[in-house]
Length: 365
Image 1 (cartoon, rainbow, N blue to C red):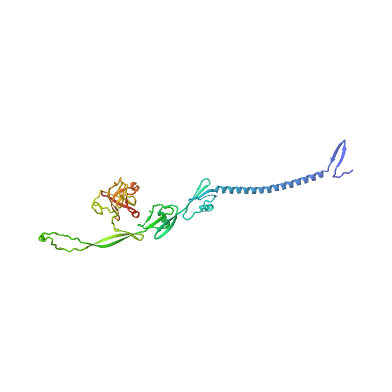
Image 2 (image 1 turned 90 degrees about the horizontal axis):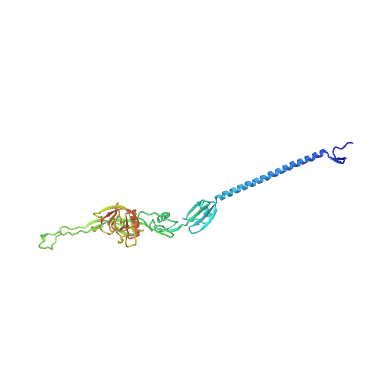
């Protein structure tokens, strides 16, 4: 009997059951299993690749973010912002431009203020604003307000664009330091020389003769006298348009006289010292020597010029004559050799006008 090509049959042989299946059926199942396995692997591989791309993109973004944060953190500074009026603020910023830092802090600089910015190690910085104060300058009939942080009268004039001529002076002095509310006065000084011709009265000279022995009261005019003429030069000192003082040109400041009873230069002296002279003013009535102060007294180094020494002082070019003076006082500038003598004046303004002059000091006695 002919059997089918596919199918199953069983028979028993001595109690053993044998089952036989068609070989073509087994091959089909194996092929289907293999195909399914290949498709699964492909699908799994595709999923893996897709997942890997997303993870990689996420990792790159994370690294970039971390790098950005690291760079930003490295540039950040804790900046302490203060001003001289007591305002304080702390700013965490990477800015180093003072204007930007002030804008972030809300503490701004104003006209005349000075800003100091310092970056320290360890991501710290400080910005301090020194607030300016107001100073008023009176000059030429006008007021000039100036704002400044610190400085002298000379600095204030420079800020205001005010210049001084050779004889002008200020109150207080140019070297004085200014503070909030200081007032500075600029005095304009002008000298005017006038030349006048004055009559000089003649003197009468009597000549005695024995010819008139009979009448001793008799006189005879031998020659009529005539008035002479002399040229007199006077100098007027004008301050801010007002006449302050008139004196003879080249006349000495000091009223003291020399051994001959005049203010003329001494005919004899023991030595001549040459150096710098300045002027000073003091309200005190006595100098360091115990002697009085006034026109005709000067401060000296007593180890060089002893107290009580009579001096005659004039500028080296002869244009200025202080005249005769007595050494009665001393000071630091003369003791350390910066100046030779300090000439006393009875007004502060005159001491400023004196300035610094090269002088010859004649030691008279």
